[in-house]
Every structure is written in structure tokens, then in C-alpha cells.
Image (cartoon, rainbow, N blue to C red; front, side, top):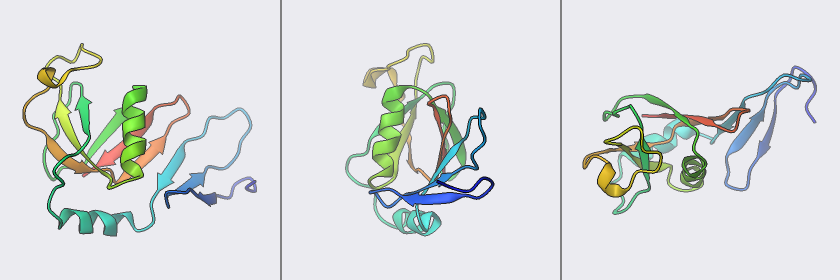
Length: 136
């Protein structure tokens, strides 16, 4: 266990490193999940052609744009699982806006036809079970 006030890091099986926040009793902590040399991995990935298939993350009330740093709050369990799967692989996914933000699980027909290929650069696990991701 980490000393109070110091960060401890553990390496996960997928090569990512989890930073353990300083331990304080009764205070929720935010877990930062990092991958070594993530900036280098993103640069290398951007130079390669897009894969023929990528997982799709439907977005509510936000329209992503190419080459724009976009912070996203992910709360639905299926979307959290999708982000975790993406982080263990190529780190790439497609962001597509939903036509109706009231629909919780949009079908392909309820999504816009155009999306943005993105790379998950950073992820924060929040104590309430949601995650925050940063995609360029």
C-alpha cells in the first residue's frame, strides 16, 4: 500500500499503469489510467491508415470535430466497457452524434452518418463509476 501523500503505480496486464491517489479516509479518489508514452503511441497511430472496422461510441448533445481535443464524460455501463476494451487494444474508436439525445441506446439508424475517428489519449475513473476520457 502507498504511503499517505505519495503516489503508487501498479502495472496492469495490458501495459497501462494505474496511479493510486493519496489515501485519505472517507474521501473519494479519482484513479488515473495511463499508458507509457501515450503521446508517442498517438503520433504513431495517426500516421497509419484507419482500420477497416472500429467500435462506435454514440454521443449525446455533443458533435465531435476532427483534430479537436474533446473531453467526454462516459456513464453508461456499455460505453464504459467499450472504452475499457478500446484501451486494451488499438485505442481507436469512432465518435458519432446521436440524432435524438433522449434515446439511451440508439440504433445505427438513430446516429448521424458521419463521425470522427479518435484515439483515447487519457482516461480518469471517477468514484461514482463513470469515467472521463480525452480524445484528440
